[in-house]
Image 1 (cartoon, chains in turn purple, cyan):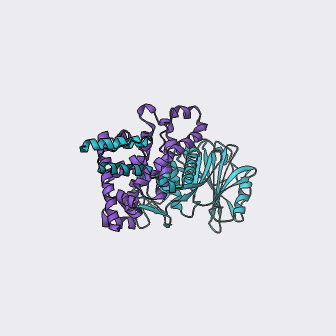
Image 2 (image 1 turned 120 degrees about the vertical axis):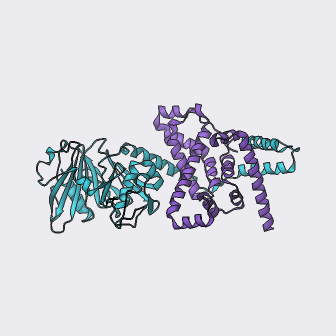
Image 3 (image 1 turned 90 degrees about the vertical axis):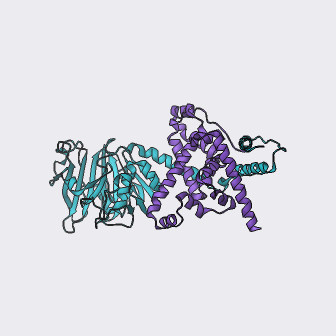
Length: 190
Length: 318
């Protein structure tokens, strides 16, 4: 089952004793690794990249730990906002890099897909990833936050700045699409 | 059950499942049950099982530690020394820019292999992620190659010189701006005699008593202050030249404080050695950096002779 440990007065603890930072890091890492990694993997079906980005999230998290304020929102929302930003940076860099990479240009021109699509398109292995690939960007992001990040709908709403009921609708619709896609795939192979 | 309430119920049931509560439900339509089952399946699905958790953990710790080490050097330093430790001058320049802007460095380099720290000197050994790097944003449109074409990507394989739009050769980057040969000369005082160099500096300049055969003191260079004079300066550049071959040894000495602290970075080998009992860093067998009695010493053989000769010169400075 998922862990929902709430790390309480984090900022206070780190401010008082910077030496226990590493200890706190270990604790946070152990608690949230699975959720952050799965969130990344839902969006980029590539193990190495997901690992690298996960590491970046924890790095940013620890460097900015003192800036976290409980008043402003839950720790999970804060953490996944960092994760989202890391991913956005990654996609942006990919876009930039693709401009200079011949392969990247070829792929972008021929399919006129976003870098995100290119990554997912080339890395898909299993049926689930393929089904996820049929979702649009926002649906995929919400699925990643929900099932990778194991967040509640109101938390997702806060991260994406949309209403909670909107999140519910998109999850329902996306699950339906996934279901359909996976069933139709099965039929092809039968 | 209408669609709206199905959407709501699905969310509630999934959140309940996440919290470890499973409701027995026989009344909902088959279609709904299937969706809920898929949702539960996705929640239980764990991609991270195949991932290398330990390596992610270690990588993060390593990165965080390196940030801690680098932080005192983030202050942009006008005289950030850029020496060609690596075979590729351009790459070294980029590395130095990167270190002034840690966020950029982070994007460009995946792995820091080793960091050696003395009081005011850090040497960082990177494993470059790519052999080509995009030009940092603030330098776009400012760097050109020999033909006058704009350089848009730094490539490790490009070994030519780099120029400004006006065709002036760029020799270094400082404060994120290119430093050209000509605009550098105006700000430099050259002294040809080796005695009394200390009267320009705020510390005692000690020259090496040993030099490889054929090499002798050529000149000292000082950076002028805003008034165009040199007084109590914290920096001195020294050149020892072999008049037959024209090859030279470069050395910089600095008064050690927060402003003069520097970080060198390279993708070549770095190791810790000792010079007269003091910790020193040997980079790529071409350069030695050390700190003694509040002075920072940076010595570069520029690849002209062996590591042993280099160490011998360094040890003769006392």
